[in-house]
Amino acid sequence: MLCDQCKERDAVVHLTQIVDAEVTQLHLCEKCAAAKGIETTVSMPKHPLSDFLHAVQQQSAPALGDQARCAYCQTSLRDFRASGRLGCAQCYTAFEGALRELLRRVHGAARHRGSEYETPVAPGFVVSELDSLRERLALAVAAEEFELAAKLRDEIRARE
Amino acid sequence: MTLDLSLLPDGGMPWITASGPHADIVLSSRVRLARNVATYPFSSRAGDQDRRRVLEQVREASAHSELLARAVVLRLDELTQNERRLLHERHLVSRELAELDAAVARSGSAVLVGDEAALMVNEEDHLRLQVFRSGFDISGAWERASRLGRELGEQLPLAFHPEFGYLTSCPTNVGTGLRASVLVHLPGLVLTQEIGKVLTGLQQMGLTYRGLYGEGSEVVGNFFQISNQTTLGRTEDELCDHLARVVSHVISRESEARRVLSRDAGYIIEDKLWRAYGTLRYARSLGADEAMNLLSGVRLAVGMYLLGGVSVYTLNKLLVYSQTAHLSLAEGRPLTEIEANLARARHLRTALAAEAGEA
Image (cartoon, rainbow over all chains, first blue to last red; front, side, top):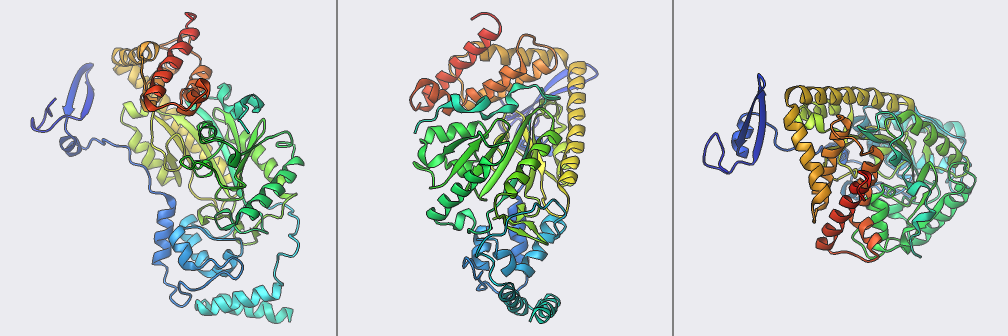
C-alpha cells in the first residue's frame, strides 16, 4: 500500500482518525508521518548508566587519574569507566571525591537519608580506621580535593 | 537437579492472582532492595569461592528471616538453560543472573523463593531482595521489603557508608538501593496516542519506564514497567509515595483514554478486540510477541466490559505460561521456534476454550 500523502513510499503507519463521529483511515509512510508529527516508535529511555558514565568522562580529575586504585580490590578508575561498576565497598572510600560529585549529578543528592539497620560488624575487615583515613587523605590530595583533605587531616590529628 | 515447580509457593508469583487494587491495569507492584556483604568484593569482581561463601552466608541469614525461612533455594548453576529461562519468564531472576545464553550459570548464582518475597544472590549485587504484590500496592510491597531488609541486615555485615548509604556495585543504585516499580498495561493511552506525553511526563517527574522484562527489554503488548530512577537523597517512603502518586495519575489517564475510545470509536475498538480474541481462540501458530499483543487486546476488552467470562487471573497466567520456556517444560523437551509457536497457539486456544466452558 502506498502512502496517502506522497504516493511514493510504502505506508507503514495506519492511523484511524475520528472527526465528528466520522471515521477515516490514513495510511502514511514513515517520512510523511514524521512530518505530521506522529510518533511512530516508542523510544526507550537511555540507560541511566550511560548518563552516569558520560558524567564520569566529563569529570575533570586529572590529578587522580585513571591509575588511582582501590587498595582492597585493585579496581582502578579506568576499570570503573569501562564497566560502570565498582569492585567493592572500599571503592566508595578510595574514589570518594570523584564519586560524590557524580552521585550529585546522577541522583541530585549525595547524602543518604533512608533507613539504616543495626548491622553486625564484619570481623577482620575494616582496615585500621587510621590507615583508612591516611589512605583517603593521600587520594584527596592527589585529586586536589583540598577541602576534604583538610577535614581528613584534622580527623587524623585528633586520633593520633 | 531438576526444577520441581510444585515446590514453589504460588509458582513464585504472588502477583498472578489479580486480587489487588486496579489489577486489570496494574499487573504487579514490586519493591526491590540491593545490598552487599561488606566482607567480599562485589559479585562481578568476586571469585567463585567468594561467591559460594556469599551464598552460604545469605542462606544462613535468611533462615532467621520470617519472610524467607521456608524459602526454596534454587541454585542457578545446577539448573538447565530452559529452567533458568523459566525463572526469568516468572520475573524471579534477572536476565543478568539467569545468563540466558550461557550453557551453565556462574558458581554461587541462586534465587531463594518464599511465599511473599524472593532473593537473588550474586546478581550484580550480592543480594537483590524483592517483594511482588498483586495490582497497585506499592506500600504493601515496601512494608514487606523493609521488614525483610531489616531481618537480613541484622544478620549480615552489610556494606554501608554513613554518607552514601547502602553501597552497590553500580552507583546508580546506591543509598537506599530501592527500586519500586509497577507493571502497567496502557493500551488506551497507546491507542489514543497519549502515551508519548505520559512517558515524557514520567521522565520529568524523575521516573523511568522499561518493557515487560525490565532493563533492556522491549515494550510489547502495551506493558510498561514504571519505576523510580534515583535511589539516593530521599527516604524509602518518599521514593515509594512519589511513585504511587504518579502511577495513580497514570491509571486515571488510562481509564479516561478508555472512556474516550468507547465514546468516539466504540464499534471500531469492539471489532478490533473481538478479532484479537478470535485469533487467540482459533489460530494454529502464534509467535511470542504476537500472542502478547493479542492478550493485550483481550485484557483491554475485559477491562472495558466488552468481553465477559475471561478472568484477569487467567490472562495473567496466560502471559507467563504461553512463553517458550514454560511451553518447553510442559512438552518435556526444548522446542524449536516453529514448535513453540504451534504449542503456544494450542495452549492459548485450549485455555480460552476452557474458560468459555467449551472444553
